[in-house]
Image (cartoon, rainbow, N blue to C red; front, side, top):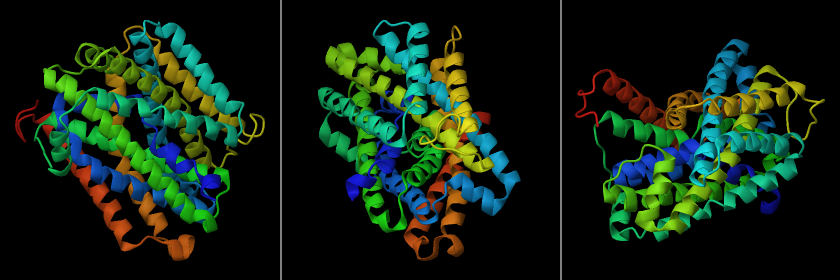
Length: 406
């Protein structure tokens, strides 16, 4: 039974996109092991958030945007969808920026690789069924093992790494706060709540199968945070220790060559390419699900283009715009990748609040409503992110308010 429902939780939690890789590389390369204290809280919070999504999908048979429209009205849903589309379009641009960056490491021009990648991800979803698309996505998840191997090849000092995991550290600077927001926003992204619930509905998972979905989510959360951990450790043990500074993912991969060897650098770059292609499929798809649910369009990869024209047109447009902007000469690839994650961090509390209101609705969820532990964890996440965002605004306007800006 577990094998029949496996997929939504593992796939959603493990979409470490190009912006994610950039954010984790910057965190480890520029701040070393000082961000590792976030790993355990992130794993717990990721599980709580994803579990709520699959539970609502299994119990109600509806996506998150559907439920928001039905319970909060069209106007609120419209403005939420505007924010989601803007953020996810930036994220989609970040994925194709990741394709360009990873392929340029191997000497390939983005003017060839980005259009080819755009067509590939479009073809896989538009011409496939949910079952076939899910299988491809699950295979993509396994390629993240390249980052685990890179982590061991970097030869970190493991006692120091483990100490950093359990001993909290905080630097009151705008750059460090931005990194923290970026790491949280990219690990627990707003689009994930919409996609995981839509995937459960699309797969036809029912409330009776919900307990197996929890195991799917738990597995995905543990694997996802393990990948984050090893990316940070790899960059901390090499780039940060050597005193280099990471400004692009390309910088990180190239810096690994003399510091950890050619094989480590190649694995890191391949992981980035896989993450970029994987997410360039998922993010536009998640956005199309969200908007289609919000306005009541037919949607789902089990439908043909003729049966769900608005759904597939939006999916196609997101890919075309995302890839097209990256082909502009001198496009700021790093800035696109990095700021997309900060936008995720700012939008996430809004999505969390809607999720909490809905999942505590007795009429909708009945006996499957949240327990106190889930509510405490989710509200705490929203409060922390709102606080970090406020600190980021203050340090941006007044760099010295919490200490030095760098």
